[in-house]
Length: 313
Image 1 (spheres, rainbow, N blue to C red):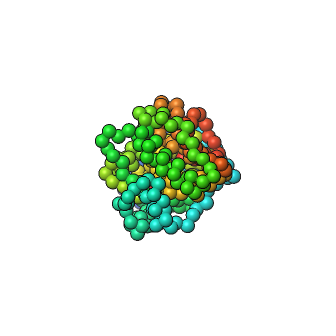
Image 2 (image 1 turned 120 degrees about the vertical axis):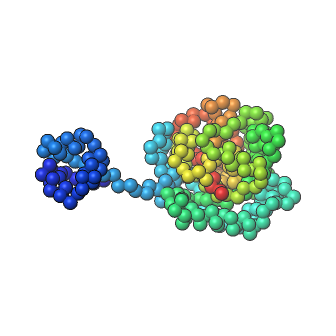
Image 3 (image 1 turned 90 degrees about the horizontal axis):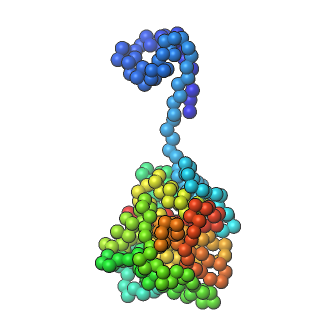
């Protein structure tokens, strides 16, 4: 921001190299009030705003909560994730086994090539220059499998397909632990997608085939669910807010990362509402179990919880 003070005498001197058209343009730009102050000999201050490229994520990959009306608090860093080394073939095999697919429509090399291309876009493309810092956080390559369009019910598919896969993956890795779906039998016809989350656009793609993408599980740590939804308005269109299908797939493919122990964050499925607008859904883990449940107090910010962001083509 720069301030410039100019008297009437200085303005007249500066005008000697201007045409009448130039002066008319200047007067139009200054406005009537500033022009009258010049004519009357009063000094004035003209303020120029320098346009800056504002990054949307900080150096740690967390979304910068600028201009939000709903509550946000600092993340509780005692709840954290660690970026794994990615073995694409291994993660894809885990997806195949626990979703009980005979054959996947994507090979490990296709999976890797697509995810590396997405990372390259975020890192170097001008279109996503404001989002490059998200790569400083945990980023997990995932494959979302197709879902049937006919007779589609989000809650039913979430329970029968996705949460079942989560349970199998978690119990295979941690056989001494348990998985609990506290909303068992209560999801069909009761889950809806929040407007503006873009999760509906992602589901629309899944009606047509698999979607490869990058899932960031905790860039919104410390954001209330309502703030998570609100911040979507200023994110590029290819980001969608974490719902049930993407979050559950990520947990299935990376239970060692996302359900490690008590110190992993809780995961809001902020793109979803359950029963009515007062409730959403979430995952949470500790040293003994992983569970899925509804959540209330959507306007309250917890430093140990985060929603996810999904990035794809």
